[in-house]
Length: 288
Ligand code: R5P
Image 1 (spheres, rainbow, N blue to C red):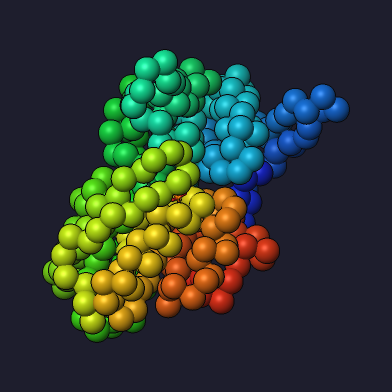
Image 2: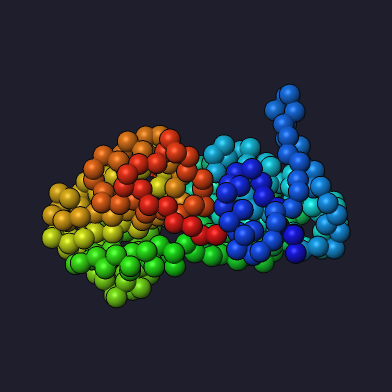
């Protein structure tokens, strides 16, 4: 078994390697003057079971391309099996056509990964679980929820209500609620007018005087979760926590998340969070 890391989240890869009691394999990565990427595996991997860790976080195109080049390099080096370990699967939100003449990028990325030569994929908290079916190779879909739930349970929050920030996230929020002693569930009825602009309408369920935990797969610009928190406060929630696996944190997420709406914003380290994006209410848990 051999483990290699792309450049997207070296710290997480190192934690995984430590957990497994092994070293990350040696690999050269560089960029040519014209911006093209170069990868070379620095040891024989002939006949090996190779795991490549690379989330497709920002800059997403570079990290995705680096993963494809790593897969291709391993396949051409006669690895027995190549598993792409993708803690955050980017381009996942376009998982169907919602208007004419659009691309389904989640499927396009699946095609690219398969065509590059991956034999197996392991990804965490896909934006929609059916993306597994876009692959014709084995797919392990794992979840950040055990780590998030352990943390939430340890806080013993009183009068808990688990809130889905949109109708699409109800199954996820219900699973959380079940694991938190069958806490009640509330749903925010949201309509989105344009990409990256969230419009919140109303809350279905009782949140008055309760500790609300908003659960989502990702926080990108923070619009969805911040609008949700604002509405929950208006509806009388006494405290609001945000909980998500993937901290994409595109601007202006930090301003929105640190504005005092939240007691805590709880995320995992599938995507690296630089010091410049950390704020007092942020809690980062490891999924290594
Ligand atoms: C939407 O379907 C997703 O589950 C997230 O709610 C959304 O992508 C978060 O984006 P933002 O933080 O930009 O509102």
